[in-house]
Image (cartoon, rainbow, N blue to C red; front, side, top):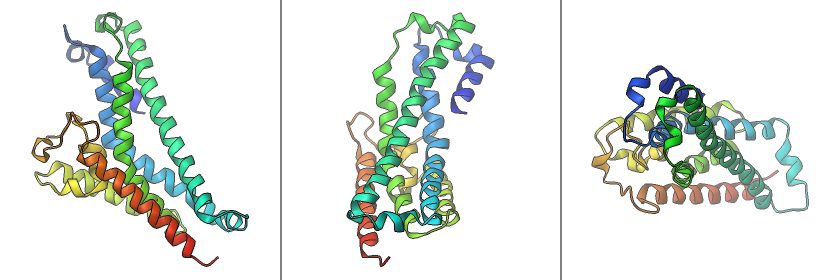
Length: 234
């Protein structure tokens, strides 16, 4: 869906997308990553984790796993690693898809001049990597919620509501979004859609304060999840 939107925007509005002297790859990948970071990434994470762990609850999969001669923490870690692998794979495909869209647009609209400029492949991967880091806090919280609540509806509803609140906080001139992990994918790096300059986030840092907070939230909720599951009577 994201790639279709980016392709359509360039194809239907070529007079504004084609800029002489500017690298068209920059505009293309920034548009894609903005759509992903702001509108798609958090709902995707919420639904993915809620659905994946809900299936395990309904099929009594956790009870079967706990019957194995292995520590619960290790088994739950496998689940988390699998979910992270899905996120990484999806994000890589989106980055590669953006490149495919660029070459496709160039074949249809040569005036966009994609082939006249160097493809910033490493820059594209780096930008999507930052989005993944900013999503870690959301992953940790949703993982904890999906383990605590057996159904799909409760953790998914909390996650979607939190996403809406995070989006609203981002559009308001307050610094509350700095303390709300569901806002982190939107504010961690400048997506050029909302004014976040008043948050004073260092955009040039290897890992800025928002991304470090996301990592901290992830570690806290993962450890909390492992601890509570270890104490649970099966």
